[in-house]
Length: 257
Image (cartoon, rainbow, N blue to C red):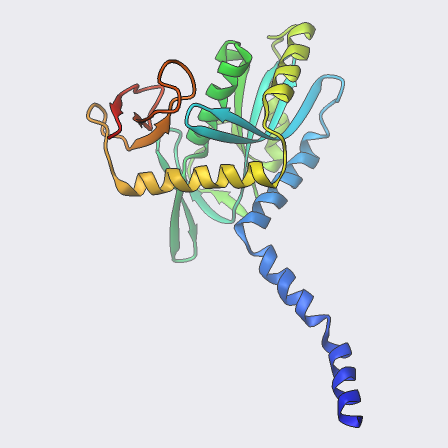
């Protein structure tokens, strides 16, 4: 009995270690870094005057080949701002035209998709959904974390501190109050319901894209990776086909057999 009591007392004294270990593991995951980055940007964007800028966050929209997920959308009379968040550290190398950028931490380098290109798909999806001119859509890429740009970046690629000045620099009125209300309504009604199932489906879609890129089927016209897609409308609804990953710049398609 004495031994059992001693063991129980020891367990009570060290029970807190396990939650600490679990928390340490969670905070190092890409998922947590992404959530933290989006939360940080959300706090920054809320500083915009709410009577002029309407913030919509974590929007998942259906596309012809699956879904696309947008961190933040800001709707105003000055345009629609589409914000992509990156929570990264280290040195960042890249240019607007490169397909991949480089993150360097000490001696280790990793490549990641050009966030400008990544956000371009978001803009095209919104352009189709909202039926507005793409000149009223603005791409904004915000880096959160201890990162440093080692190459010259476009004005719309900023650290957290530069996010608001860039948005406010777009001061030409492009949309009427009626259009702003209609755009907000279309986004809210067109988005997929927020929740675990939607996020899981989107992650599965992203994994499939990565797998297809690894497979290496190339476009016969431009040489880009071909991706397996599914027709969402028309007489061929439900049928699969190969489409060029450079769409809409390249519209090459091939039959899937």
